[in-house]
Length: 406
Image (cartoon, rainbow, N blue to C red; front, side, top):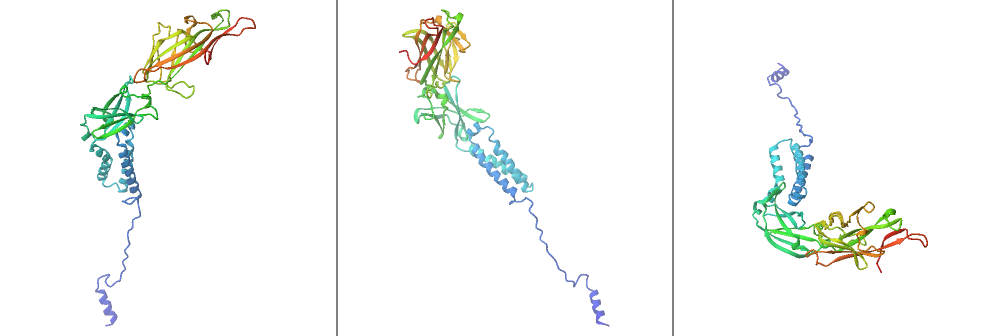
């Protein structure tokens, strides 16, 4: 028996594969980045947007911002939605309910915190009443759970930095509109008015409710009530040929009057309008010391001027003044296309001689709008004959503005 035969038999008796030397290769399965996972770019972008939306939510939860910009609250909601989508996709759209709950809590956190606070008030509006007598403050409160039980408010008004009025008044958050609950405080302007509001002389109202306070600068336009500048003017109504006596080619057949009362303007510009002021205007056209036209006293209340028209002798008896400017027409009984107003015909004048006339306008106001002193203005006019050949009769008349009647 050969050695080879024994060896072959031994090998034949071993199971298949025994004695073979095999090499095992372990290959690591490394996944390529696919945009998912906690450290992916979409996850970071989503987290960043969520942070931005959260900050905006805290800024926009203020009641005044909500009142002034009603749709601003949609901005953080839209940003939260974009953030949710990015995070949801980055997590391979798993755990949807958990992510949704987290986002709802984030979005609601500013409002929840405000509702659990001790109550913060905000003056959101200051509206002038239709008769301009009062200013209504609309006050909203952010801490409704603990803050709605207030029953009074401490109110202070300052002018040019000094306190001009203060009082404790009844107050409650007892109204509601599309933006939420609010309360109203009405301030009577005549109780604290001191003078015209301006950039350098603002009116500021402060309200303290249960230890929470807010302030607002009131609109200057609402608090400009004192007339400090007056101007007046006349214009001659011209007639021609048949309307004139002594065969003149042109002549004065009447005069139109107007005045301006309001805020002092620069230079010779007309005064600025005072749409909420109350005052009276007296206007007289003089010839020397003789009153040749005495216009009815005009009473202006909250932008509406009224006077006795004497059955149409002095226009219609009413006009609007202040909103579009300070000009107050003082019409007569006869229409003039050229003057765009009604004039007072010369036959209605007490004196209609040639010479110098002056037109004086006086404005007075009662307290508190003024100290009852008179603000006045006088303009001067020459009524003259002109034209004609040498030694001949004058052919025209003129009504010309001048500087004085000396």
